Amino acid sequence: VMVGPFQSPLPMGRARLQLLSLWTSFHLTTGSCSGSSTFCAGETTQSGCEFWSGCSWSTSNSGSSASCTGSFSSCARQTTESNCNMWAGCSWGTSSGSGSTGGTGISQSFCFAKIDGSYCNGDTAFTCSDGQIAGSQYCSSGNCQETGLQASCGDPHFCSAKTAGSYCDGQYVKVCSSGSSSVQIQDCRSAGCSEFTRGSASCGTSNFCAAKSDGSYCDGSVVKSCPSEAAEAVCRGVDCQASLVARTASCGSATFCSAKSDGSYCDGAYLKTCSDRTQTALLYCGVCSEGTMGIAECGTVRFCATKMRGDYCDGAVWKQCDGSSTPRSVLFCEAGCVQWRTGVAGCGQE
Image 1 (spheres, helix red, strand yellow):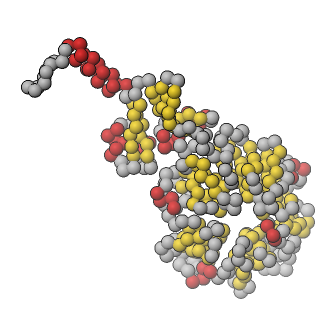
Image 2 (image 1 turned 180 degrees about the horizontal axis):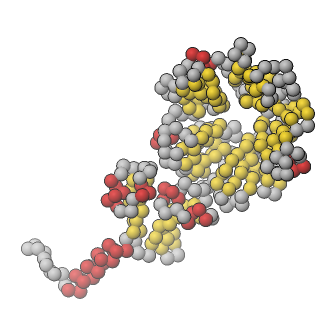
Image 3 (image 1 turned 30 degrees about the vertical axis):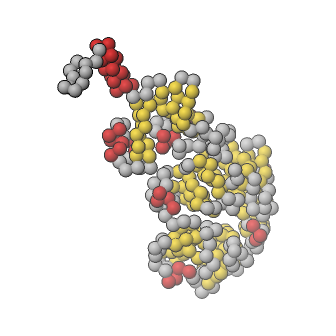
């Protein structure tokens, strides 16, 4: 054993043990790279990981291994902490002997550990798939009903004996497919649902488009497209306004985009997309905010800019962030938005 001028030599046994310890530590230490950057998951060494801003390296020694565990098959396929935490029902941690550390899974989404199907949670019907929320429908009438693994606003089995078409189930328009129990639902709210002929239902007045030219019109609080009778929107908090000359209608101003450059803007609580001085999209936000000219968003502008991939609550707005500053999807939660854990959120109640 070589020693420096100010070192005392180690006894041979201790030197061998120390060298063995260093060798063992070097060969049995493993680790993973995780963090907010998209580059983290691809790095397999500590130096490569720490090169990227937002990435950090975590290690586990012999007898301890980090892994993604949970109630679903998707958990075992995740090899990094950041990917693991993207999945409801999965938690990242290390295990050593009979003990474990890391995520406890106490705070999970509504669908955690549920069999695939749909369920009522208060006035919201959730569709669950592989432990995750695949969809939700708020029942403004407060009549979410659940039978077996089927839940719906109104009767869950409404379409089971119906031929293809649209029908009224109370205040809901339900679009049924022949021979299928699946259903598309539109909530007509205070405008009500009406059927002109069997299999032809719409929000608002029946046969509203009978004497009208092609275009959009106000049927009370309903923005209705003619001649299809399709309800484009049921206005909330504002009146439906129409421009008879242009044959257009909207919640709020019907001519809102006529003087606007291309982009997205707030018209009260509504987010409107303008293109070529024409309104091309309308979305109710509850709260709408504007940033720079032509950039607006439900809730907070650029909310996703500082978020990892996943689902988040921005007040009462449920947003799906994909790594960019603009959310992939946005939904106003009438019953409130719940953040079950980082990256796992949805409409409904705790």
